[in-house]
Length: 68
View 1 (tube, helix red, strand yellow):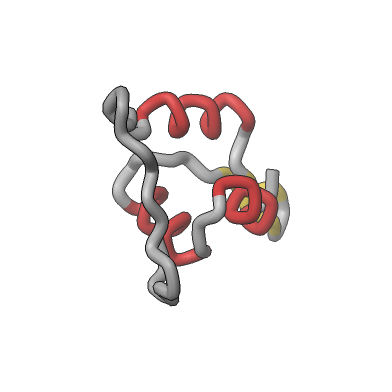
View 2: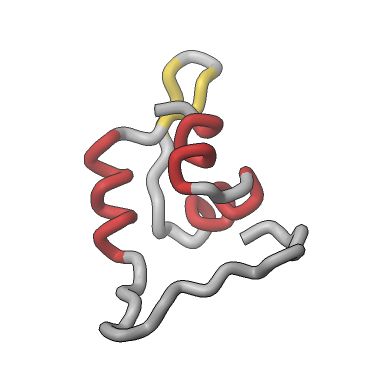
């Protein structure tokens, strides 16, 4: 999957994507000039995300323009 596809699917910006790669939380590979994320790496990244405690609702940041 491309960076754009990944960011769209997981609703993050490119800066957050690159931060995750630079921290070693997500692996990206090159195919020619394209940067890609392999499905197995996406699944591993999602599996390491913090879990929302039971009984709590996810609350968005209404009106926030900051990159997540």
